[in-house]
Image: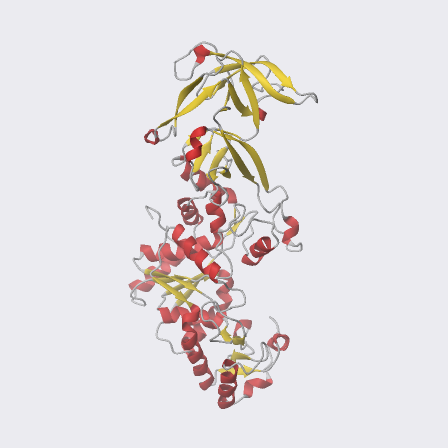
Length: 549
């Protein structure tokens, strides 16, 4: 990972103290996603934190799929998550599934029943909620709570054997219905679900709840520090209760940190799934999505994402980070990696009337002035070129220094040209402009005569390659309003598709190649829709930003 590391933070301090006093022999962390969707930028923070801290302490990190809910999970998500973690630059020490431990979890549940610490419940979901009480009122005990150990063992085995319907019974931990922490008021730890599981098939029809499964998974794997987000802080007493009463050897420690929130960014897998299911986006890897696969397709780099996660830091308090901060690190990373080139997104044809017909000359340009070792390229130049429509105005305002009738500009890497005539169609629309060029003004020849204030870019019309450009705006128009369905905040202008041209050497561009287009910003060759006949470029970030670290 180069020189990236976590500056001092409270989790690192806890790990250091635990090792120094011999509580753990080594740091073992885990990244435990549920395979019910694709990873997003928020998960990247957890990936970087878990793998990064273990690396710093020369410990281990497991990738574990918390697949305890077969209704929502799929093998597609498992494969995508593995690909994303590797792309971010990490490799796991162990690859596990919660479902690998279903037999052991069942035995631990039986152990709790035998110890009088779990019982089979007959109440419905709504009745359980009613009996649980509120934040200011204690719960009341269910009639099922007084069942004998033998009856509970028999009923739980019948649940396992498929003798009850979904929702007909659940298994609850017997803790304290008067606890001030509602999570400790006899939480459900097993439910019935006659659903085929992506990993275990039809072996099971009962599945452990996350709050019961998670501490057991950590303990079985010997995890030392179980790092999760602050919404699980209230669950920590239950986490510790499960570890203590299920008589597992290891004693993992749960530590909570604030999750990552970005401005104008949906950070909920449920909502992201709605975008996909409603065809608002082109799948989980749409470049407008904050998913790792979407960011990868757009052109973000793993180095930039890792640096961003390190710089955001780790805290207990929730906050919202400006997404421009992420874009800043992408821009900084690409600045030294992406070759420069010219592209015309909204073409206007220019005919250079005094340039010899049928002649083409090759001009030379550096691929990246900040990195001379990236070499040079040749650019064809001839009588007809394309420029940007915005680089010409027939009746310009003051201080407009680009092309207009009678004005002279420099063509990047080429010559001075002067607008002499404007050609329009019958409806008065400009179809091309005619210019003359000064052969004495060739770039790189040391010409010191007239000065011009404007420099514009261009591509040769005879050899340029057609290309599609996809420009993006935030998918969400404004900050989310809790009172409003977030789908009402979707920005209808989040994607703009333009047809233009790139330099002819771009025909060799490969999927995921990144370029800096002069004046337009950084672009990535789309890996999904690009082929030899059809070049597609996704806009990554602009060249500059007002954002300051």
